[in-house]
Amino acid sequence: MPLINPDMSEAMDFEPVEAGTYPVKVIDVKGPKWPRGASDANPVKENGDRAHQYLELYYEIINTPGMNNKRVGPQYLSISGAGAGFLKEALKVLLPNLTEGEAFDTDMLLGQVATLRLGEEARMTRDTGGALIASPDGSKRNTIEQLMPLV
Image (cartoon, rainbow, N blue to C red; front, side, top):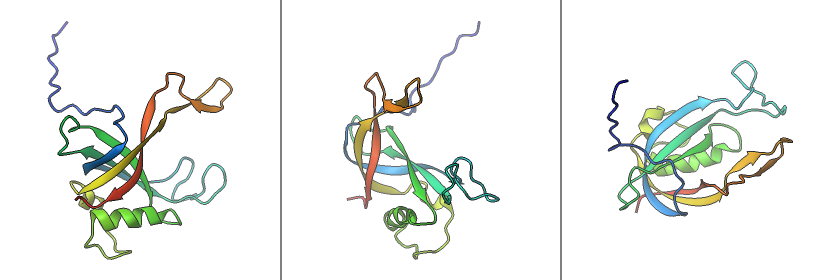
């Protein structure tokens, strides 16, 4: 068997972080994506509601001793419909020179910095009957509560 020597010097930490406010940079943008069951040909969710495409943003905590390389996300941002107000607010912070409604390349978001306020909630799972319940192991996950300009 071959001997493997892994290099963990740049490994991302996926454990939830303590709720608080942190400086971050955008490290990944995925999308636009459709919700499950929807597509360009059929923009309707599985429950019959109109679907809207969205972006997923991932962040990395920066300039915080003991917290660097901690990954946070995804943040889901609808690109149309009423939920697009969250994207509008995010773009004001991440791309402040962009005119409202102006088309942009998602790559423009990569490397942008901001301040992120994180919350924490119980990680959810389904029981044997399919009901949504708090994870029995008591594990938590982060919630993204607010994106603000870097101070």
